[in-house]
Figure 1 (tube, rainbow, N blue to C red):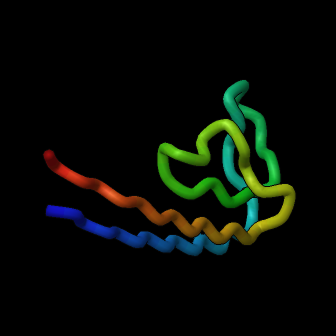
Figure 2 (cartoon, rainbow, N blue to C red; figure 1 turned 30 degrees about the horizontal axis):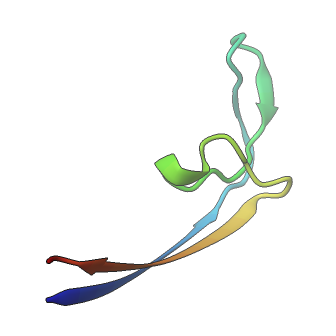
Length: 56
């Protein structure tokens, strides 16, 4: 039986946070594990995903 799924995430980031070296940096949006390697160049990020699963 097939299954269709959709997922959407939105994040807004503002202000400053601590970087990996412990120094303050501007906050950027990073949505979920699927986007860890590609943070937004701004404080906003939207992610949309769709999938189809079929069991035989």
